Image (cartoon, rainbow over all chains, first blue to last red; front, side, top):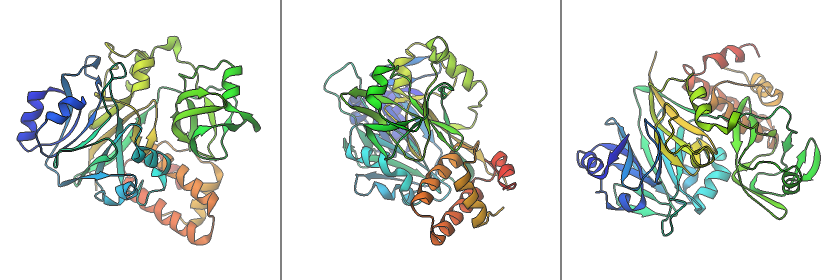
Length: 325
Length: 71
């Protein structure tokens, strides 16, 4: 939940295990302790979306055995192996860093991934302000990094951990299928209904709305790939596309009302066991969510979401459900 | 439940759909690996991983397990 700087400082000094989101300036001032942090000024609070540089969003975890580790692009591949068996690892990756690129392109291949639960987000800055830098912080050491990921590995022994997503977009039934022969963030040619086509030309000639993502069918689950820009003969994406996945362009939202669409999706979901969530800056900006409520799942608004792998324009949440057996 | 390597091969080649998000992502990744390396040794590893995943998440993926036993 949202906390003042003083309240957050107090929790740290009480020895709580925390995940913290807030501005770079506030994070740098917090005392050392058992926490990781990442920068953003955008939040989804209980009552509405907010942009603030004087509050922090804090998730407090029970007194689980835990460790905090920083990873660069050379050792990020061991993040799942380092996770506790049956535990949860919360990762914060700075935007536009080499470690983010490595994670985005290769997380699915990391040893142990999916056998261990890794969720998290990409830190950023206020898009309307200059002089800020996306950071990740290891609260134990005080290390503030623009090029390393901070990871809180929690040893969860008494709960089943589950990572879920909420995607308000769905593939447009009238869209052609879009397939790629190589994985990557920058796309030139692709197969549109099986025909080799330059994607940038296709987007321009069909006047497609690039605020709507490509939606891939991942074994029945719809995963978004968002468009960063279309420049010349290239389309730049926020997350990599993969071969062997069929994508379609997303259907427009009814009246472009993101908040209503979230409330509709979330009405079917309980947040009772939710311990962490984050939502995408593109949903926040394109859906003009500042001042609007989506009903549930408070947390940072982020520059990429992690549900094992990097996803886009998606709400990610984690639940702890008491173990049965 | 434990799936055989034959059943896992069916899952990786026939485009099944799943409800549990983590399992669907996991199977999609494994399908990509299988297309690159469909050898018996690799399939045995995929089978072991799928069974470990199901064992770890069995309470959370009951709907998918009902479908998996039909394969």
